[in-house]
Length: 497
Ligand code: NAI
Ligand code: MG
Image 1: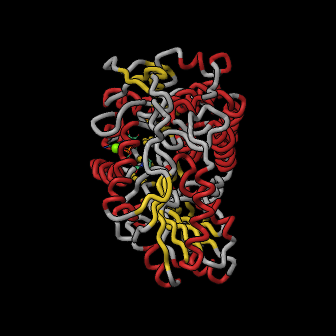
Image 2: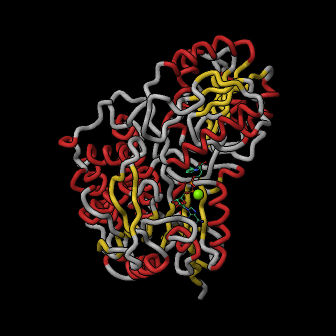
Image 3: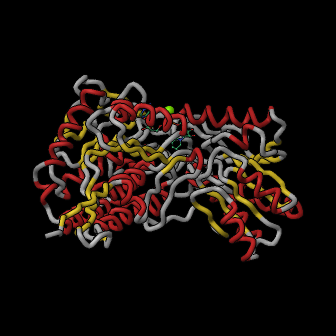
């Protein structure tokens, strides 16, 4: 297997050291002295050791973030200077794009082409987009009563805790830091324990970009009983933003009640991807593949339920199977790889277990269905398509978070709309049709935060993203993220003589 040779490994220097926490502008060991391993999921080799932050370290990070928020250069700098820092960071990420792409692929397993052409450029674009917002935050004057001059101020929320997952480590960091920093907050980031490396490298770049001490803090470590829980419980954190599993979201919300901190949650999904007989079938086949196999299926908006109109079911399945058979699975560092390993042994086992559950429920494996026999190492699961699924089965209701597509035939528009919505989630959905009326009708019928028409997994920092129902609340990206990271203050001035 052709993997990146060591001499080409731009992140070698970074990987040669034990990673520390970023607190108050300094790289420090965890107070406990503990560290944990981060692993390359394609080879199962240890990439390096990382400081295991806990409550004590979170306390120090919060103190630094509080001080940086209440006093010092961050509070008094102009919004243009704030924008410049975000632009500096974007430029530095772009300058180090190849190294960051390698690091993301080594830590997460995703194909290097995706790291290089999706994760890194979207991270850069997100910072540039929110740099633009820093200078455009406004309050309003309100003509309520001529006896008073009434206006609003839009102010930062304060100290923000951000807990992110392992599926898009650097991009999720950008979605969180971009708006929080543009609005003038200070942050404590907890990357996922499986994939802490790119956040730490970008933390180094943030220091180089010139962010004042304490504005950006990174505490690596675990979730429950670790740094994650300490953040969600902390009495001096004003807001917590989370992306991850719905169960974890509930725990974070419960832990937040001590000081009623603001919470935004971006949780899982079980997206319906609906193909009508009048669709461009070849385009829809490609869309179904992008929808479920991109990032090894580890995507909250993955199109994991494929609804096919009965009359095209067989033709569609033939074309789908042909294309899936051509997908090259392997080490993400190999340029030719289309699909890499799952992020961890735990996730590999979870996905394989769901395939067994589906078989037990009566589903048929149309392709894939297991770990590839020729891969001796790595947490691989073959791209898998299951037919004979109905919408009430566990495989159609629970988030697998892996390369497993459940195919469900349908007869009528009403039937498919009802089934598409018969899920506890509501993050996204897609419809494939040439009928413009049908497309718009579906866009309004589906209870989800994003609908794609004749496309899948399209993103832009300007377009809001977030969930209905148990997929969470709050909208990230676009101007909507500004709402998450600001408070509105109303000021009344007596104008009466
Ligand atoms: P998770 O939700 O437990 O982990 C995400 C982040 O939350 C990590 O940084 C973790 O350390 C932290 N965390 C965990 N427990 C916490 C707690 N009690 N308090 C505060 N922080 C906590 O997700 P996990 O266990 O890695 O994956 C399990 C499943 O979750 C996946 O199979 C998938 O279905 C779903 N998931 C969904 C994601 C999404 O983007 N919606 C991303 C990652 C996982
Ligand atoms: Mg968990």
